[in-house]
Amino acid sequence: MAAKRLACELVTDARLQEMIAAEFSAPSGIADKAWPHLAISILAKLSMQHHLVISSIGSELLLRNIPAVLRAHVAGPEPQRVGNLMIDHRLERPEARERLRQMERETALLLKRRFGTGSRRMQSFDLVMNAEALAIEQMLDVLETAVRAKGLLDGGLLTPAAEAQIQFQVRLKLARYGIVPPDKLQARRTEFGHPSEEVFANLLDFYRIAWNYEPRSFPLQWDKDGNVQEAFTPDFYLPEFDLYIELTTMKQAHVTKKNRKIRLLRAIYPHVNIQVFYQKDVQDLVIKYGLPEQLAQ
Image (cartoon, rainbow, N blue to C red; front, side):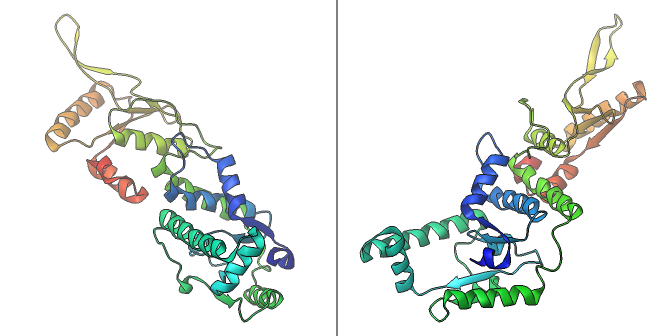
């Protein structure tokens, strides 16, 4: 009724779930912690076409950092909620009361999994309405007045530039879960020597940067008969940039040995471009993208 009154597109929790499942895929499923980022991606796309009324568990947390929204909550006394369940599902009162308890437990669990909190705080909402004191039409009047007062329907739809920025931030956050948006390169099946290499490959995929893993070894030392005694194989090659990438997350003694090889490579093959990411660089990626700390070890 609110969506109809305000001439907005209605996005329910079920619809959001369907759109996420249709647009995103992950081989091992979608982590609950990734769900808010996927939801933001979907809502950003819809917001370029319509103003939205969103009815989804935890939407007040999902949109807490977005200014052009009104977070509204309808609170009802338990007898009224039990009565609604009796009518909607044709239940006896004891069954409806147990059903309500089950729904509350499921909601708390879902909030915990997705947002890290099992309870709702009224401070998270801009507007709280009491269904015991206000009829539906009265609540709609209050809601519409608040929306008009904030000018939420006057500011226009989300611009493509703003949507692109949101999607960029979403991709950064999804990197930690290995979820590749449908318009990006699909991650290939590659056996990596270290978890940090897989993380780096995921980030390259999100930026749609083509890469090859350990595509070439560079001979560094030969014996008197011309046989290769020592060689160096960089971790990645980025053909678009003609650039090799080496990730270094080992102990300092091993880093020193690897640095010697890289110096030799640069001396013997001055035309080869190579960039080295040291342990601190990898740790910075871990911190920035919220990746598991063991990846930096």
